[in-house]
Length: 357
Image (cartoon, rainbow, N blue to C red; front, side, top):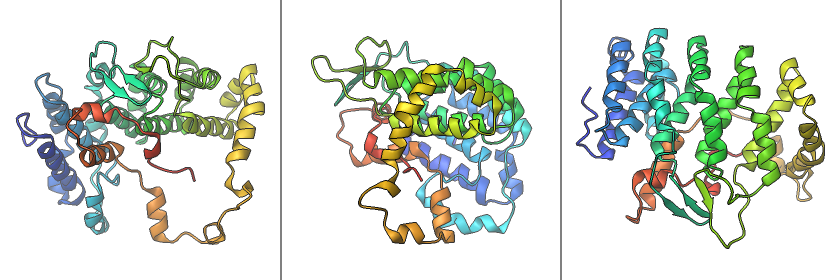
């Protein structure tokens, strides 16, 4: 357990987590099952959530839990070297009891998503972040996203009861320039809307008010000095447009698509006159403008006609560990000015993890 020790560097923590993830994927089932046990997970969270531990311990402990929930998820590019091992036996996945062990620490994780008491400040080109999101909070949102993909009714009920989904969606709008965050929250919303449990859909539509939040953000369209959120624009300069418009567009289109087969979503959209007007006058036109098949230059025929081979399928279906990508970025641009948590809060628009298909 104490392979992830507090006195070690973040690089050592990352390597230790990689070893544990590799064990769950490639080791004999008897060994992997020990790491998947509820008792191990409880001890892992207890160890990671101690106040004396650096945030990197929590960050990489969550990577281990994500690997248990979704063994096929690619934790890093180096995992490609072990990909062939997946065909040599069944993957060990977290049992319902192990998931329950993770959920016991959900409340403590959600407390860390509260940024109101944080005092750190990160200057940016558009203003400042008070505080920056930090890679540990980003990883918590990713953990929530993965929990929603395993089909556990218990997990979904706990995420709704403890407002984990609502808090994640709030962060989406509080940090409008963090594309890493937007990627995970979009996955959270889509998982909820595509799920089989009506109460989760109702939660996203009503308690989380995803439609209302999209409309407010679209109406303002740029950073506001009147906001009490963590993203603060520079005074005296033209306020930039918010950077999550692309993800909001995708979420809006998903709502409309799912509304065609879900009466609850359809009714919720149609009874909102502001949404109907925005969909007609803004969203439809935006989709036409962004449809590459309608561009004068056209779409390359080779891309339009080429069939997808197995390698292409693997590339398109891959879900990257964006916190790991953020860490690699911070290593490449290490100037010694910010801490690792601060750099993790810099969501650059040009670093979107996946282009719309």
